[in-house]
Length: 278
Length: 264
Image 1 (cartoon, rainbow over the protein chains, first blue to last red):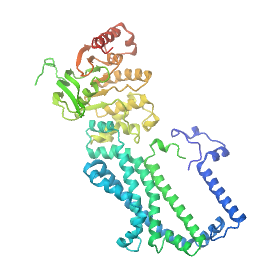
Image 2 (cartoon, helix red, strand yellow; image 1 turned 90 degrees about the vertical axis):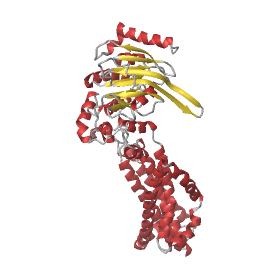
Image 3 (cartoon, rainbow over the protein chains, first blue to last red; image 1 turned 90 degrees about the horizontal axis):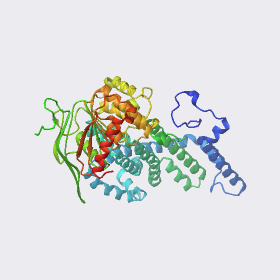
Image 4 (cartoon, each protein chain N blue to C red; image 1 turned 180 degrees about the horizontal axis):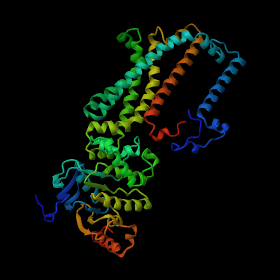
C-alpha cells in the first residue's frame, strides 16, 4: 500500500513526488491508522477482561485467543482449508454463472422478462431457510456448502453487472456504429470495459457473500470447516476455540476481498474511483 | 433520381435530395427536417449553422447513416447511404474518449473497430497527434487531458483511417472560448493539409463563417436550408480574418437571415 501522499496524476518522474516527514505520512496512511484502531480495541478488550470478573468461557481475552490460535494452528488450518475451498469454488461458480446471465438479461429482452421475476423471487427466499434442502439435494459433503455459497454470491454479480452494462452512454454506441463495428465488437471493446467497475463491485460483494454462504452451510450440516468448528466449540463451551476460528474466518474474508480488489486495480486502474483509495 | 444540384461535370461528394425526417412517438409526430436539398463538392468545407433544435444534428445523423430518413436520399460518392459509409469519420459533440485507453489507443480504436491492423496505422495516428500538438501525450489517459485536448484526440480518431468525408457535430460547443479559437484555427489548417470533404454543424455564426467554404443557413424547426452563402476567402485563414470587414459582412448576412426567420 502506498505510503506517499496520493498524487492526482501518475507522476512523470520520481523527483516530482512530494516526500512528507514520516510522522505526517503515518498520520495519513489508512493502513497504519487501521492497525492503530485494531490494536487499540484489542488492548481495551484485554483490559476489560482483566479488570472485570468475566468468565473465560463467556469472553476470552485477546491474549488467550491468540495463544490458542498459535497452539492449535495445524488443527485450525485444516478446517480453514476446507472452508477456503468451499468459498472459492462457490465464488467461481457465482462469477461464471452471474456475468453471462447478466449479459443475457441485458441484451435479450425475452430472457429478462422470463428470468428476472424468478431471480427476484428466489432472492426473496431466505437462503438459510432452504439450507436443509440443499443437504437433501447435495448430500453431506462439501457440495451443499459450495451450492449455498454460490447461490448467495450470484445475486450481486448479476445485479451489478446488469447495472454496469446498462450504464452505457448511447452516444458511445453511435460512435461504435459510425466505425462500422458489429454488436460483438461493440460489446468487447465498449460495453464490457464500461461495465467493468460495476462488475468488480459485484465480485467484491460476491466474495464476502460466498464466505457467509459456506459458513451457513457448515452450520447446518458440517463435519469440517471453520463454521463447523465454531458450532462444535460453542456447543462444548470451548469459547476460545470458537473465537480463534472467528478471527481466522475474518482474516480469510479480508484477504480474499483484498485479492479481488487487487485484480480490480489491475483491470480498472483507469477509473477515477481508483485515484484516492489509499 | 434528380441530379439537379450538381453542376454538370463536377462529381458531388455528398448529395442530399428531398430529404425529410419525422420522429414519431406516442405523443404525436415531430417534423425535425423539412425537405432538404444540399450538395457538397469533394474537398469542400460546408458549415451548417442554425438555431438549437433546428434539426441540424438530425441532418448529420442521417448523413452518417446512424438514422434513417423518412423520405429522400443521401448519396456519398454516388453511393446511397444505407448505414455508416465506409469512408467516414465522425466527430461528436462530446469527445466520447474511452477512459481505459491511452491517447494513442483511443485514436487507433477507429481502425480496430473496422477490423484493420492497428499497428499499420500507428504512424498515421502519431502524425495526426503531432498535427494537433499532442505528440507528448501518446501514453496519457483521457482523464489527464483538458477538454480541448480531449476533443483534439477525437478529431484524430475521426481522421486516422483517412476517410474522404469528415462529419462534425458541434464539436467545440462545450469548450471555453480560447480553446475554441485555437481549435478553429487548428481545424482550418488540418483540413487544408488533409483535403477532406467536411460537413461542420455549429450554432455559432462566427465559427461557421471562419471555417466554411460555404455556409448553409438553416431555419428553425422544421429545419430546412434557407440560404447557401459562399465564403470567398483563401485558406488557411488566420484568426485575424474575423476582424476584417469581409468577415463582418458575411456574419451580418447570416444574422439578417436569422432575423428574417425570427430566430434573432
